[in-house]
Length: 86
Image (tube, rainbow, N blue to C red):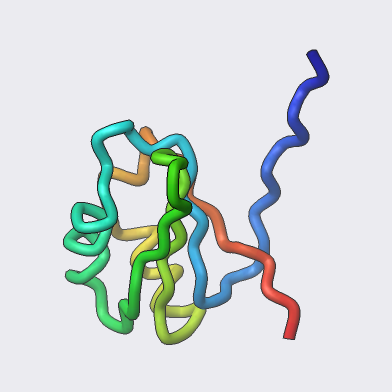
């Protein structure tokens, strides 16, 4: 089978893309995790796909702080900035 293209990390913006989450991760768990960070707005999930979540903050600085501060992101899930066109 063809190999998937690697996921690129983009410059900071207000949406984080979380991939490779554990199957038991729910929208509520993700919201509780991000709620501790200033500027957190909401978590968006893809119905029927458990391992992908989007976390929205007020701005890229706050999203970056959440991405870099959470110890659970250091090893397990892949957390990158999502590319957003103005």
